Length: 123
Image (cartoon, rainbow, N blue to C red; front, side):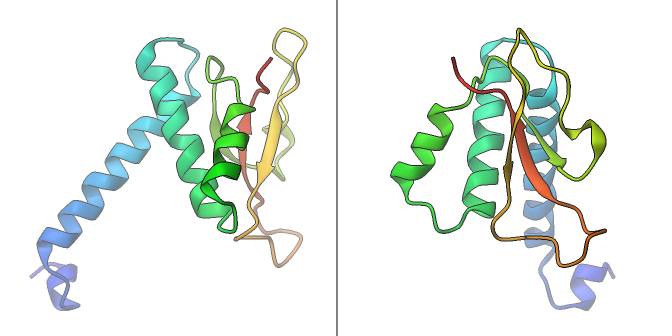
């Protein structure tokens, strides 16, 4: 018996969760890459929207759209630990990356991670 069955969770739900996690990981990997294909841009938009919806729960749909409009989706988008030194990478074409920090999961202790969306501002 799987651990899901032991806990009373149907395997179907576990399979769906695994499928969604795999899809998110594929998007995150593509979004962080340096390509500018339509697939890269769509993955970046999905990663950014999912981050904002999860980590900025008080934002209205209009506010979310405004935040998304400020992101250059032709450049990499990543979910990072904003506390790490390399979170603020070198500027690209004179533009420094921006970090959008989670409002829902704020660090409780100094050593806790700072969940952030790293992107480049739209021109």
